Image (cartoon, rainbow, N blue to C red; front, top):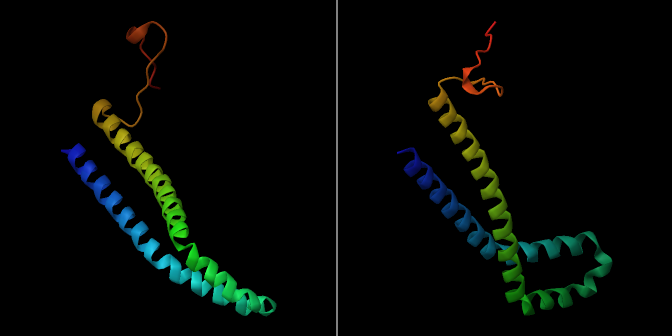
Amino acid sequence: MIEKGFFRVNLLFICVMIGTVLCSAGVAPRVAKYYIRLLFAIIPGDRPLRPLVEKNLDSHSLKNMKTNLFFCFTITFLIYNGSNFAASQKYLAQMADIMFGSDINIKSLTQGYLTVLNEE
């Protein structure tokens, strides 16, 4: 039961992240144009280069989109892996509590399980 819920949460998280990446790929060209406008507003001496930069962005839009998707999927994978490890850590801690019945389980490494440890 727990594994099924864990799988569903992971599947939902993956779908949300893929949807976010695809939405960002659609918004990225507009953000780039606004960024160029802002950049040339801050540095007015470079305004003669604005048509060249905009034409360059338009002509390389397919390559820029591929690079953007690759970068976003890489970041998404890293975020997913980090959150998956955190979730796995909590899951393993819960399973240890269920299996051993306590927060801490102390065992002696000498003479196997026959050694009795003082609890005082």
